[in-house]
Length: 344
Image 1 (cartoon, one colour):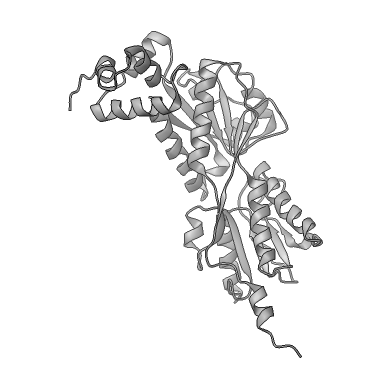
Image 2 (cartoon, rainbow, N blue to C red):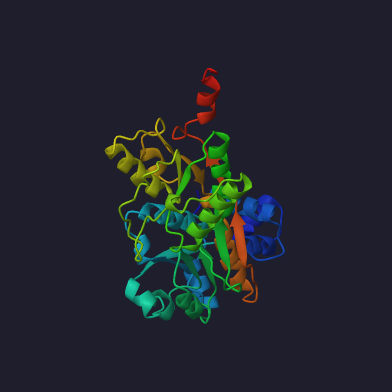
């Protein structure tokens, strides 16, 4: 494999101009997405190496993107956002960019201190993973580089957010429980903690409303404290037949708590989650959950940042990416039990 492959070499192989190759490799307009992907693939196969240092000197860009995660999300939930970071880094590579991870501390968020990777001009844009305070978002809106919020939004319509369709995902999985004969269904999650949990709760509530089922407030179970740390779950005295958990780790914690009390899943009650994270396969039995399309969310987030770098006036608002239910063994069909009962 040659180490000095040029754009002209790629152009000759594909029968297009060097200008087309340059536009494709630099993600400029004027080349279709299909042709861009083909050119990038051939360039990689031929061993083409993009000189980001020279380009950085010429254009004044760092060719780095900052990926910011709030400190409260770096405990046991790190695996979910680390997966996002890995996927974002992979997508960035296709744009000849690198991702720099920055952990936003509680104090810096409260005191509205901007990430050092921004103030030291080490990045060309920022992607924020997860919920941050509204006042901090307002500070981010004042900065001179593009920012996209991933897995989070606020009532500030002018910010660009990429989200999984939390509302519809939980609406669908609650409908699934109801189709399986469940009528006493609890929701596990602090509805004031994040916009994602709020939307998941509203999807659960809409499903209840559509099926003429009353909301039992004892069935809305708080899962964390004000700093986002998980707390002991309070199981209702009137035992639900099913629990909708706001994420898979909470479902994992709930199943462990139920088992300590001698309650078996799914024989005694059913449990579903959200994310399709590693916790969905660590539970016993494996968890029925809503899979977040993290790969597509990462692609869209990076695409938005790159387009905003080329045109700072571009706005996208809220963009929702649909998830899919993954059916496993944590749900019992109560309809089959009813059908199997003999009439008196």
